[in-house]
Amino acid sequence: MRSVLLALFLLHACPPGGASDLPEDLTLLRTELALRLYRIVATDGNRTNLVLSPAGAFIPLELLQFGAQGNTRRQLVQALGYTVHDPRVREWLRAVYAALPSASPGAELELTCTLYVQTGMPLAPCFVEQVSRWANSSLEAANLREPNGTTILANGWAPRQTTGERPGGSTWEQGGAASAQLVLVSTVSFQSAWRHRFSFSDTQLLPFTCAQDVVLQVPMMYQTAEVNYGQFQDPAGHQVGVLELPYLGNVASLLLLLPRDRDTPLSHIEPHLTASILHIWTSSLKRARMDVLLPRFRIQNHFNLKNILYSWGVTDLFDPLKANLKGISGQDGVYVSEAIHKAKIEVSEEGTKASAATALLLLKRSRIPIFKADRPFIFFLREPNTAFVFSIGRVSNPLN
Image (cartoon, rainbow, N blue to C red; front, top):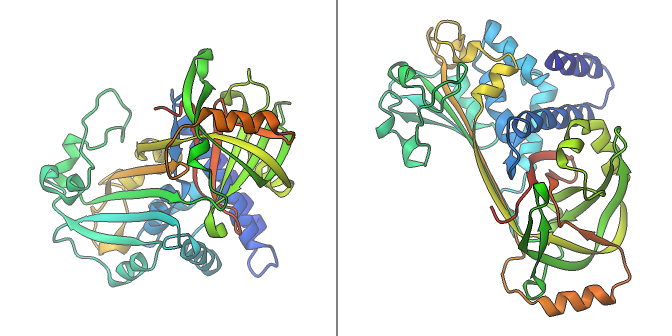
């Protein structure tokens, strides 16, 4: 039902020939989708560190729209709420993907979507052209019917057989390997230098309170800087501090959401986050000089998107009898065997050297406001000009 509402939102916001603000509409829509994706993963028994990339999850669905037909295409469009067959949407997305910091000084963003195709399967020239132009996407031939010999394994995508899951639950379904046709793998990783770097000499071990009041000593980075900051209240009345830290060259920024009340768990904040609330909060941030303490962290997650896509109504895509992907090869019986997503983020001061005395003395002398991320927080990695979210996650334990 939520997908239908999102689709209706976009259709009403972008009438044919209308004068609506398409970039703003699409940004809000994709942010809402990002939050929806995050909530599904975060509430699925996951109370640990988490990072996922909405861009990495949505690009494969956009790409497949170029080759899908009939009900398969309708399901893909309904899940996203927009179609890449609309020239305005297609060109906006291409412009946004082209602007991502893939080769900016001090920033490294890897955002790729690889479509592994069974060796020998013919491909439609039109589809090949679309893939080559879409967000660093590529096609690669592989012997999908013998997983142990595929390039996917060489890249670290080992198959795992699981039991007791609903359809599409395993990373590599043993019965489906013999007729595998397509495997989608999206990968996102990001590293960058801060615009105002944390001094590694000021990093020190400080307490971080995890769930169940477990207190750990973690390397905590420190700096005094001009930042964007605000204090807000969500619809349930929880107070939230919001801090934005820019990266070098303003190619991206890290948005941090920290409950003001130390006894408020993230699970009480997450259900109330919406695209409109985030837009209001980020638009209301004020420049402020603050002491910032932020733990170093590195998170990497690996997800099978099939479970999520099933819950979003994308079912025909994975069914060899129902999938209609004639736009890819012109053949019947072509379907997607797997949809795998891997995301990684690393936040550091580009060096590690603890010096407890220096930072503690600085804090004692300081009279400016303090943002101290010494308990679980939510983060968004965004492109600041378009508010495009390409990573979202949560830090529950910086040492994991």
